[in-house]
Image (cartoon, rainbow, N blue to C red):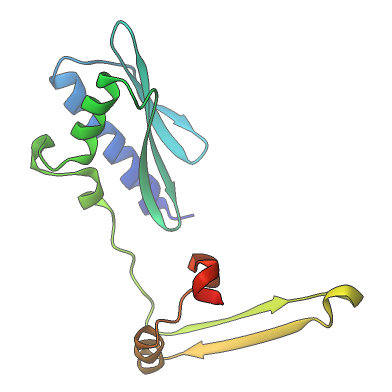
Length: 149
């Protein structure tokens, strides 16, 4: 787990919390959850939950509540629109630093039903990485069934 991403998450949560306080919204103090920092924004009829998740792939802001309410739409636009202080939360995402070289292994299959255990190893240089990008090679979990077929 990247401490930098956790630090970025608390920074984003603090900035959002302070901006909503400055605009006279009722907001709770920031609490730490499992892999997130969160707070509530309330009006007399609605409570919304702002959660800033962190992990090895970066940070993600989630707004929870009744998405049909006008209050939700108002807060959603403020969080995810660049109009709010001229900067959206997405623009604060930390760019992942890519290593120059990759090396790794993966395995698939086991037992009589699935056949033998298959293990593959790889070593990727910057040149090979460029070729793989040009060939549109991606993580199979990111591909649709249609693209796999």
